[in-house]
Length: 342
Image (cartoon, rainbow, N blue to C red; front, side, top):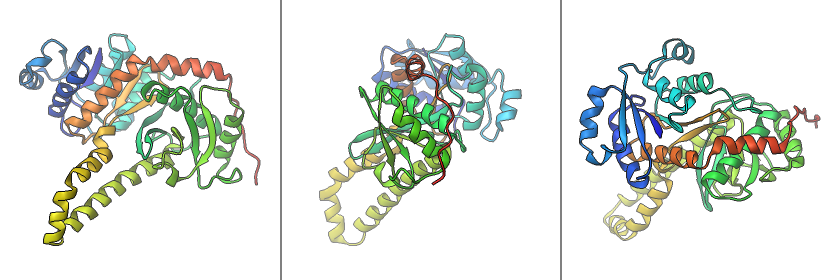
């Protein structure tokens, strides 16, 4: 069972139901419960008869607003569609929750209801990143602005478990995002994490540092960063993809010859567009909690929300939470280390 916050997001609940209809085709065996306003949801579900046997509604007319602060969401969020969806994961009636709602509120409620897993100090947001070799996993994407070495090591373990679950990698390569590949570069947290990961004996291969230009090249299966650097890298990549698309569109509109050239190149350009479409990679998972919560972009379309649902289904099937716990236990206690000044 997958729990859906049907009222979270800029275009809810319409996009939630449309995305669910697309996801049902991919996962006919999955079952879903939508938490939200029954009066608004029933007509939408009626437009998709195939959902009648796989989706139910849990009514609530309360929802977390887009501008709600995390503290306010914790105080006033009980009974909202977001709270109830996550609560169903805590109670075991659902294996994962998906929401396109307020990120700060979602993280706060998730941490309150699900708690962090044993051995994890802080949860992190992880998602896929398109590369020239396929897909990589990147974390943290904004949950933790300041991190110490211990946090980064835990992120590496969680990210590797995520890559093994969703990308089918037996021993993914892991790298720390840094301003250079030399061991002397980086801040104290990065260098401390490097020292710890070099000695780690886990189900991944640590390959050292990676620079920003190595992310898209696919130099590592898992890229580990603090939430500040990771979020900037993600948003920069998304903006660059849109910039390139805009340049190409302008170039092909310049003259009759370029318009004819566009018609000839259109199949290849459509393939490129689909490869870089951020909606295909929509959905970041909160790793390190005692249950699965997937965060969809608030402004996503139906394709993007379907991708977030697919991620939740795959993570639940792969038993990611227990896999992370087992990997951390195998790694042993991770001490806090301060790197020596250079």
